[in-house]
Image (cartoon, rainbow, N blue to C red; front, side, top):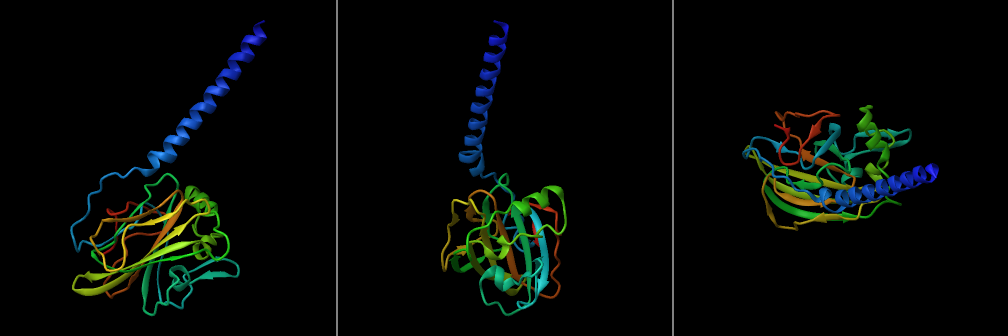
Length: 238
């Protein structure tokens, strides 16, 4: 008789644990994932803000035709591969990986006007970002190794033009979807004025956001690979 009581208690415990896990998953998936905590936006002209929460995975200053990164043997990426645009001047590129546990709302890096918002389908199937997620957790550099999603996956590119410290400035915010992403949301369109720190879109579940911005003499990059950043708060470039 005692063995039946132990077995019954064990089964009840397993069922309770499964139910708890399902409840926690539903809370994470449908409530906590969509949280939108308030942010303290730095004053205008303080610096270029991070467009996303997450971990910096690469920081480069390059010409459009230069290789930005070597993902793996035989696979390299330029800023034109990442942006799917034909860029012609020296740029600063900063990639930010958002794990499924980061806030997924994306924010405007500096005030200006939207030139366009273009959606590009994946080149082949959307790939999983598991390699990048694992390498960020283990702090294993380079964080982008084996991450072919950088050039292959579906993406939305939002071009924002404005002024920064008396100079005309252009930028491209690249929202890159992961394999199981349910959509890339964009809340802005051509001609819309935008303010630094303003929410302009989001990506559902794990993903990556890259900032490509015109490089000027005197600009100082303030982050490096492995650092954690907060969208609309962390200054990436001064």
